Image (cartoon, rainbow, N blue to C red; front, side, top):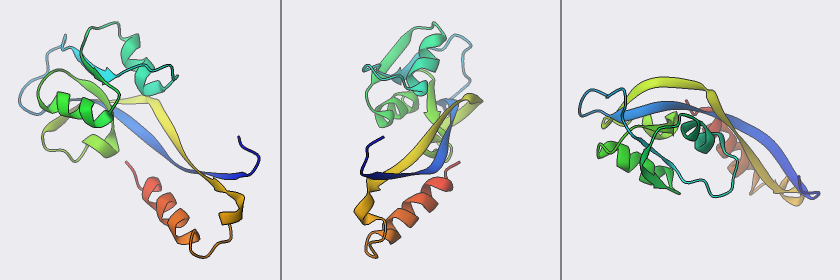
Length: 130
């Protein structure tokens, strides 16, 4: 909410609970998740609300995905990062966790012909995320 910025909603990220594709998923599988660094992010809060132990935590979704691939546990991951990964299997959808993605840029860029294609491309790409 900056005074001189233009913001537009670009899309919505949806999440699922993912496990390694190597084998069956145990009902009591430990969690891999994002570290809580003082932000109130739904992808951090939801796994914590399960009250299960974490076998791995990172401040990087790529690190969490790598831990799940290695079989360290299951994790809440955005579909764009996990659904096409053959090393992962979707355990279940988690429709209660969503994240809106917004583009924000200085107002003077609004009409700039060299910047508009970038804004349009980002908005189109993010809108196509599963």
